[in-house]
Image 1 (spheres, one colour):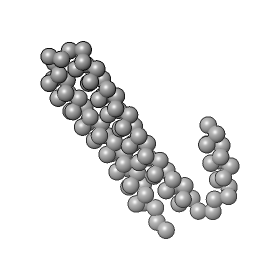
Image 2 (cartoon, helix red, strand yellow):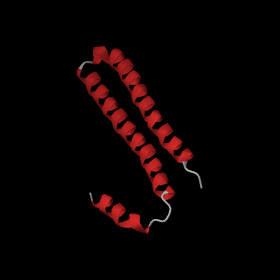
Image 3 (tube, one colour):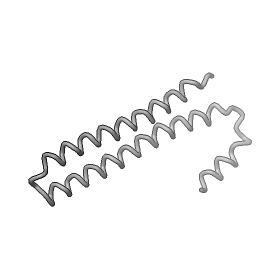
Image 4 (cartoon, one colour):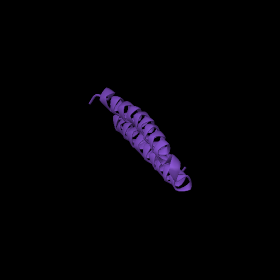
Length: 92
């Protein structure tokens, strides 16, 4: 909440809005990567817990966890690509 106030206070000082667009592109790419890291960490933790509780199902759990991690990583890749596309649209 405080960051938004700081950005709004700095907005009248900014002469060129391209810098703010670059910040937005960086936040988009960074947010996608952070979210993917959290998702993959949660998948890994839950998979290990499931394997510890039921060792005979470890193979199925591991396969499902790898597939889910790949899907999360694919979604993060889309977020990073969108961030780079935003950055590419900015002309100097």
